[in-house]
Length: 170
Image (cartoon, rainbow, N blue to C red; front, side, top):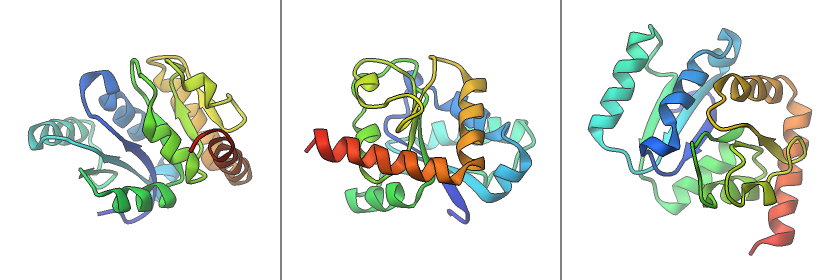
């Protein structure tokens, strides 16, 4: 289960969502960050896919409790996860208009996302989250480290994210 502060991904878990890259990014973060944080992945995900992810985590000699696979959750549980996480990450190779990004932002959570489709209309880079180029794990890692090392900026970005959603979306 979730034992520490956490970074969240919620949504589909197909190949275009690039979850394996997100897991690798998280596992390469500095030890001090992984000591205090877990990566939580929620959404429709088969047991086979979870087992494949766990096998690749084990092959990297990483602890299996650093990445938590929650599976499908109710709207209430999802809302609680958003409200409790530090950061939301959307590592997709391509994305439509990601509802989970809006949900996270409405809970005062900064988002690190790729700049696909309508996402740049919602996330203003460096203001209420970060936009990172597609398939750029090293940049995602730098943004995670920056935000977790700067809690005041993380807090302010979250407040700005919520204001954006509150003012422009219902």
